[in-house]
Each structure stands twice: as structure tokens, then as C-alpha cells.
Image (cartoon, rainbow, N blue to C red):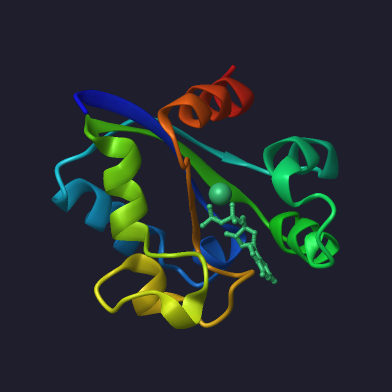
Length: 134
Ligand code: GDP
Ligand code: MG
């Protein structure tokens, strides 16, 4: 706990569906601050790093083709307990299990295309912020 920074990324489906404003509004209404943000086009190399824990899954090529299908918005989000707090407002990975009231629960209709990434631990948040913001 305490003031934390986490890495949040609005995925290509979120950008294409015009849901960036909705999602950013939820982050701000929760009380978190967006301390840096940039639009990016990801390539396979950075996705192999970022999703290294999934590299041998059968759906990995699908993740790469989805995540390179358009721009993403990378953000550093700061606030009290922000790492775990963002995971709560995002909702769980599997869209069919994501609770109403969460970003994924309210807007995702696929597990690959689930709108948003958020770091899953403080340690990974630091690594991911370095990876995408240097
Ligand atoms: P997250 O931390 O909740 O995003 O979940 P993970 O780190 O486990 O997975 C990263 C991303 O890979 C997810 O957000 C999904 O976009 C995708 N993914 C994870 N599991 C599956 C799966 O079983 N099937 C498919 N198609 N995509 C998945
Ligand atoms: Mg993850």
C-alpha cells in the first residue's frame, strides 16, 4: 500500500471502439492521476517481452496480431494502492467472468480483446514502466 505507480495500456480495441474517454474517466473518478501518457504502435519484439509469460500458449500469435492491429495508449497511473486498485476496476482476464461495473465486465466481449492492460504487481509495474517509458 501507499502511493504507487502502475503501467496501464488501453489496447487497440479500446482505441478503435472510441472507449478511451470512458476508461480514462473511470480511472480519474477513482481518484488516480495520469502522470504520463503516449500513443504507441507496438511490434512483436516488445510484445514477446511484455507477454513473455504467455509466449508458449497457443493463443500467443492471436495476441500479437491483435496488439499490433492499431495504436495503444500507454499510461503511468499513480495513486494510493494503484496497482491492485487498477486490477479491481479493470475486472478479471476472462471476459465471461468479469463482473458488471468493471471495465472488462461492462465492455469486453472477448478474452483477447479485453480493452485494457494493468500491471499485476508492484515489481512488474516498475519493469513495465521502464519498458514503455524508458
Ligand atoms: P491480464 O493480466 O488480466 O491482462 O491477463 P494475462 O497477463 O494472463 O494475459 C495477458 C493478455 O493475454 C490478456 O489480457 C488477454 O488479452 C490475453 N489472454 C490471456 N489469456 C487468454 C486466453 O486464454 N485466450 C486468449 N485468446 N487470450 C488470452
Ligand atoms: Mg497480465
